[in-house]
Image 1 (cartoon, rainbow, N blue to C red):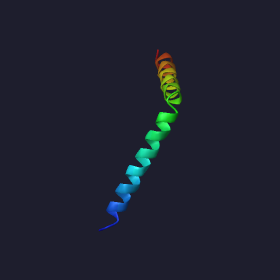
Image 2 (image 1 turned 45 degrees about the vertical axis):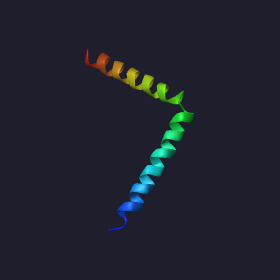
Image 3 (image 1 turned 30 degrees about the horizontal axis):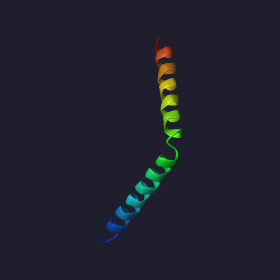
Image 4 (image 1 turned 180 degrees about the horizontal axis):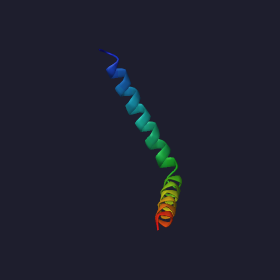
Amino acid sequence: MAPNEPDASVYLSLNLSYQRLAMKSETAVPKLEVHQVKMDDRIDGNIM
């Protein structure tokens, strides 16, 4: 019954750490989005 509470706290801590990483790597996030766009373009080209 109690294990649910620790899990939630751990999940929140992971979210906070992930947000910190996102703040530090703001330049890396757009790069990933660009890669996704390129992948979509390739998929569209293959379908065409």
